[in-house]
Image 1: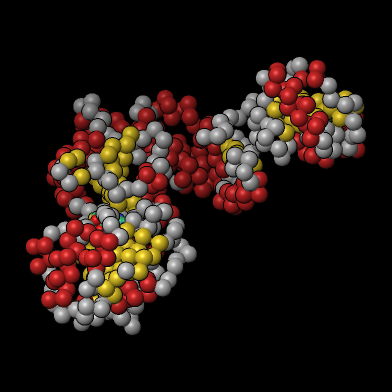
Image 2 (image 1 turned 30 degrees about the horizontal axis):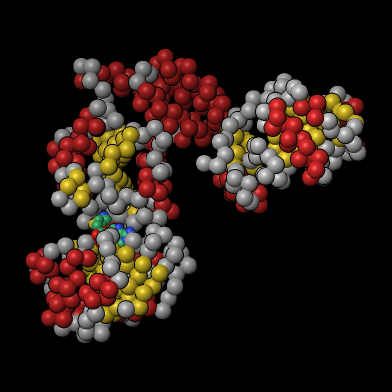
Length: 478
Ligand code: SAH
C-alpha cells in the first residue's frame, strides 16, 4: 500500500487553502461541505471566493502566503498556479507535520485527494495512488451508476435498527444475517420506494420472527448454537471475474472459507475480511485428506458458522463435491451448491477454441486422465473419428499414455491438440500440438499442473489465434 486511506472529521476544524483561483474555489467548496472552517489565502481572488467571504462562509486573506500561516490548521491545500509557491506551502506544512495536498502534484503532496462517491453517510473514496486522476474518475462514474441514491437512506435505516437488533438478537451471526436481510430484502425495497413506515413494519416483524427462531433453536440444542450452513462454491479457473454473483455473495457472508489449492488468491481476496481462511489443499502425498476435509466442514457448520467450501472450477466436476455433500447429508447439515466455470470451458474460451464447433465436433467429453488404468477404461473411438472433443483433466503426468491410447484407437497422428495450462490466469500458456507430438511437446515446454488437454480438430484454431479476453495468452506452436 503506497497510501493509507483515512476519513477526516473536519467538522468545525480549521483548514487552509492557499490560492485564489477556480481550483482553490472548488477545493474550498468541497471542504466546506464537510463542515470545515476554511481560510483562503491568495493574491488575486476569484469573484466567487469574494462573494462567499462576504456571506461569511469562508475567511479570506488577500496577500501572498507566508510560512507562519501554517500554524493552526488540520489540513492544508495548496492550489496556486505557481509550483514554487506550492512547494513553499508543502515545505512549511511538512515542517509543522500538517497533512498537505498540492493539487495535481503528488510529488509535493503528503496526502492525496480521492474521487468521491457521496451517499452520505456512505462514502466511497477512490484513489489510483496519484497515477491517474482520469482513471479514478472513470471508476467513480461506474460506481455512481452501480450505487443508486437509496444507499444513503439504507445506511441510515440500518443504523436506526442497530440498537434494537442488538437487544433482541444476542448472537452476532444472527444479527449479521438480520442486517443482511434488512439491506437486501423487502424492507430495503420499501426504503427505495420511500415507504419508510412500511420498511419499519417489515423490519419489526422480521426481527420478531428471527427472535422466535433463535429461542427455539436454543431450546432445541440446549445451549449449543444454531446449525450452520455449508455452501459449496465454484471459484472458477482463476480469473476472479469468472466467479458468479451468487458465489461472491456467499463468500461475503461466510464466517469461514475452506479452500483448495486451485482456488485462486484473487478469488479468496473477495471473502469477508474477517472470515477465517483454511487451506485444505490436497497435495499429492501431503496435506488434508478428503475425509479430513469432510470432517472440517461438518465441525465448522456444527459450531453454527456459515461455511464456504471454495473449490477451483466447478464443485461437481472432478471436484469431489459429491463426497462432501454426502458427508453433510449424513451429518444433517444444510447445504447448497453454487456452480462455477469448469477448467475445460474456461480453457476453450480463453484459448479461442469453440469446444463443440459443429463443423468439427458433435460432443464434448470431460475425462480424468490421472492414471493409465483409468485411461484404459475409456473408448476413444469418437474422438479418433472426429466426432468429439476430448477434455482431459489432471492428466499432465499421463500424456504419453494418452497419446498411445489415442493412436491405438485410430486417431490420426496429425489430429490437433491444445494443452492449456493455468487457464484464465495471468500466466496462461497454450501449447498447440498434435496427437503424435503431444507428450514430447508437453515435455519440451515443461507443461505443469493445472493444465487441461483438449483433443480434436476444434483446437486447430488455437494455433493461430491470440485472445483478447485472456490476461496474456502465450501460444506455443509445438
Ligand atoms: N473442479 C475443477 C477440476 C478439479 S481437478 C474444475 O471444474 O475445473 C483439477 C484439474 O482441473 C487440474 O489437474 C487441471 O486439469 C484442471 N484445471 C483446474 N484449473 C485449471 C486451470 N486454471 N487451467 C487449466 N486446467 C485447470
